[in-house]
Image (cartoon, rainbow, N blue to C red; front, side):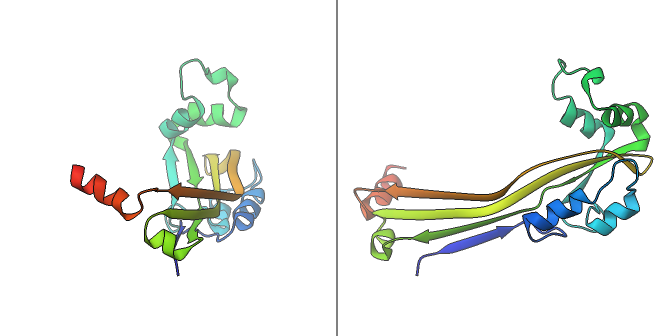
Amino acid sequence: MLPSDQNRTFTAWTTFEEAKKAYDSIIIGRTDFKALTKLGFDPFRTPNVRRLTYLDVIKIFMPNPTIGIERLDNGVRRCIEQRENCYAIEAYPRYRKKRRYGNAALDLLNFRKETEISGWEFRSVVVLVDDVVVYKIWSGVPIFLEHGTRKNPLGPIEGARDFLLD
């Protein structure tokens, strides 16, 4: 009886496991752009997959001046040095589901709202030089689960007070 909502970033993958499996299929030095598109890393046809320039690669891997190019992985360094022949593909699929639970009367009267948020997220950056993968990295959360409780001792008056004072 209580409201819920779902947010899904549309990509080629519907689960964390699918995204990770596609990522794991990428072989540095062998996988090319055409193979990446078959795996779902296609910035021209797959929603929420971005193509990044070498300038974006610099922003990601060298966010401040204290990180010198000599400290970077050889593939990233080669990419930055190649400039126009370098690009990266970033994918950030995620799924988030929010539902309210608990006592419907207390929730509707604004005394107590209990919320559960669950889902997953996966982010990857694949760096290419001359259309061949030279570096890849991923991060993410296979499963997240959050619970929250909001109590309003004044119930429905709590919201009205904010409305009247504005």
